Image 1 (cartoon, helix red, strand yellow):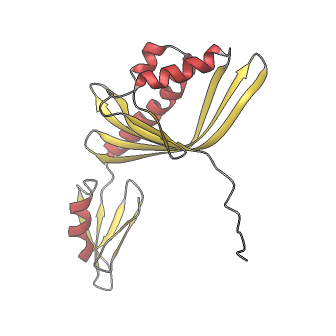
Image 2 (cartoon, helix red, strand yellow; image 1 turned 120 degrees about the vertical axis):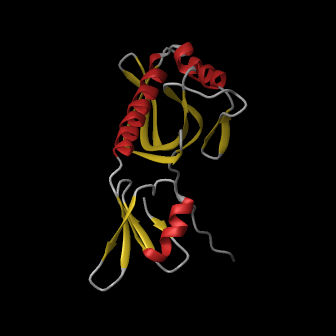
Length: 196
């Protein structure tokens, strides 16, 4: 996680260790609940930095949400509409955007779309890579990943696409549900035109 502050200092580091110039601590601590266990570390030149201790719960959350992301793609591929529906928050709060279009407003929208693909006799497989987990607040996080989805009919590839996705997930009982998300696929860069 890289953070900045308005006092001319810099906060930098990973999701486990954050180092801050002292003037930034108030801003960073107010804006990000991650900075719970801070300890001052004086440097030789008299500057005081603040460093967080490693938070073991951050590792546990990271592992838990990586497992959720894997279960998510496996459940979508499994084709069980009831199991797929359990992945999503209720309709009033759920939205999924793809390539700039609001595509789904409910778990039913997702299962209907997947049902159309299965109706063609196709099997879906999605793989994720470069998965990142970003805690947003207590019980709320974002999962970011690059993905590749392919649909096969028998041993023939019917279609495939790849891109990037983010999912906002919320704690629900002992698990997590997707509140919203976005996926995008690369497109050709716009061509320059010369006005005459």
